[in-house]
Image 1 (spheres, one colour):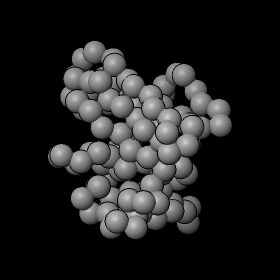
Image 2 (cartoon, rainbow, N blue to C red):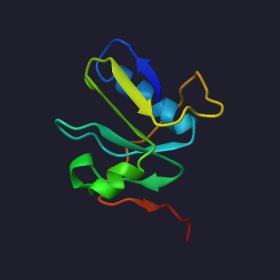
Image 3 (tube, rainbow, N blue to C red):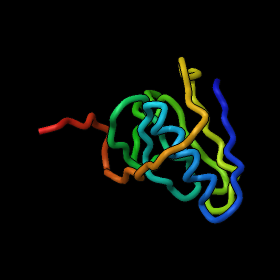
Image 4 (tube, rainbow, N blue to C red):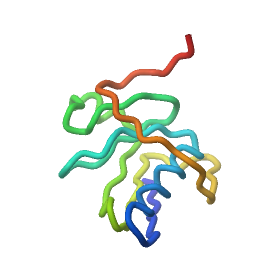
Length: 106
């Protein structure tokens, strides 16, 4: 298991840093869900909230993140460590669709 903790202080700073890091390292993440972690998949995916995933879909996830999403810290857990990961963060946008699926350009 790979574990990375984001401890940035301030409203949503740790959450934003974790999401930025995931995006920078080629991961997609689902929306946050009360009393559940947020799902993570390697690649370009749209992912449902944890509570809307089946047991089979949860088993197929590459990881998740959880913690105090407002004030931090936020912990990212991945089943396998990234081959090469970045230490800096850029901008990320939260994904909030209802199913797991690949994104495709039309």
